[in-house]
Length: 49
Image 1 (spheres, one colour):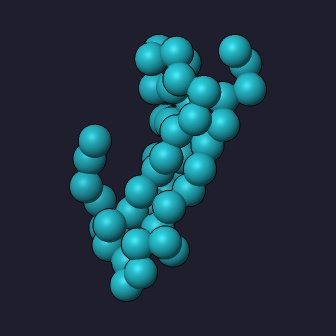
Image 2 (cartoon, rainbow, N blue to C red):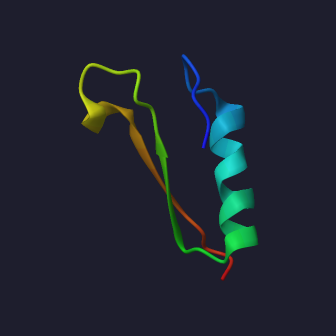
């Protein structure tokens, strides 16, 4: 977990690595720095299981 002002592609690229290490199928990248939380959620699916 980390807190940043803006989500960049590098943040999205880190999610599958963490999912692979934890053996997770689904990951969420959440940006809390938005007016509506719904707008700050990105869903990532690990298709390499």
